[in-house]
Image (cartoon, rainbow, N blue to C red; front, top):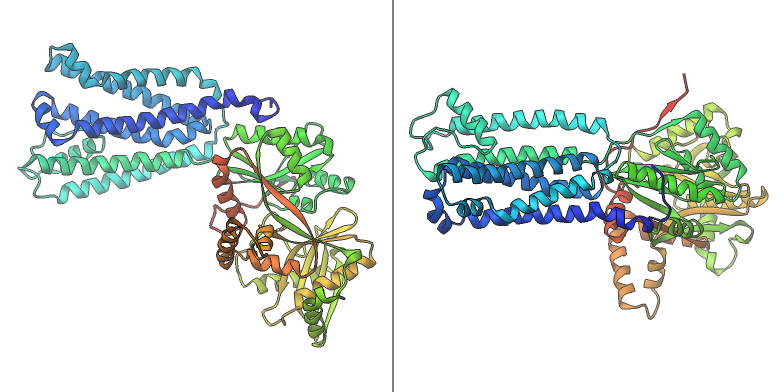
Length: 587
């Protein structure tokens, strides 16, 4: 599917599924409203003797189930999912047949007045159903997202499971109900009552009262509604996506990283194992991405030739459209953000700042570095020694030992971080990574892992420390790494990412606006759970320059979905497990 440039150019075409989704929501609510007025007690007394009860009740329950399905389908229709279009179109046909059948039964069997029959049908609803059906047919070509056979298969198995469970619950409910029937039903009658009731159809069994009949039939209909809602929810879930990265692709990305030296400090994290890649047509630029909860997220800037970025961005948007995913960019630089906004028309929001230490200017001297200097001097007096080496300079045996220590120090805790985390520690496949190791009396007590950032920079990946280590060990490791970097020709050292750093800084200033103070208080509260303030204050100790980072998203209406996906991908809240990539081409 060709990409036509700025998303705003496609506004008219893309509006059709959006408008159809709102029409479906309005239709669903109108059906429910229509039926609620039809079933008020005083109206039932007026028309009750004029209708065939099984047909009337059955058609109402069918309409309720259909309207619920329409409501659930509307969101997926907005996302242009093909299977949602199939369900929505089928439902309109069911509603049209249901309305016509209901009116014809009354006209032929009870009423000779054609006007009364059409009033029973609900002529306005019949017309709206026909119009919506024709609109869905007319715009059918807009619903062309790629199908996910795994989701469909899972939905079929789920339908079988929930149907069997609901059916047995219905059998138990009817079988144990001894007071609702004039004559206790036998097993075959119980099967009949349950089977028909789940579909909203009355059985021929006599009840002791109308109240008892309604209680039984509406309970069984509720089980049928449960089947519809749960199965629809399963069917309309975002397409499943598994990362599959072959060795050739990884090799090509490493080539780009080595060839284009002015890349982003997050670029090396593209080699994380649970990412996929979108390439420009000329293979000179690539965008890494992952899919979480229906959101297609790329972190950092595109990799490679900057002139080829727009082509990679176009391919990224096409891939998102083909699978009905929401495209989002998380943690990109200002340079990349400007290009993304120009090429896609996405909304942007400053999400925080990256702390970058300029190695040539870094020193422990001066009053502003007093806190760091004191902590470093204190821990040095406790006989800590620091060694800083590339992974290629460390033996495989020692790398395995350090990796095991890293896992032990984490104590099985959840590994947080995605945009600035490689997901592996002391791996021989990353020979250019730098390990800073703190040792006390021959025992490893803490270590940092840095990834390469172009030819003159390092970017912090992981911080590990023993539970028995002393306070200040990270300050010592960072200050020693800065000294190492200066001696070895590195110019910059990227530390942690500080979320909403400017609000923490401005909220403490004299004269801060009421909105800024309120935002600061809210962030301080959430920092109890997400460590935002503590990371900002730790980074600020080293007097870094702050490089703003941005998120971009299609529209304000999608921001909550994108924010939720970011929290999931950073492991702040539970999320579907992102499976590691299947490495192809390896025996």
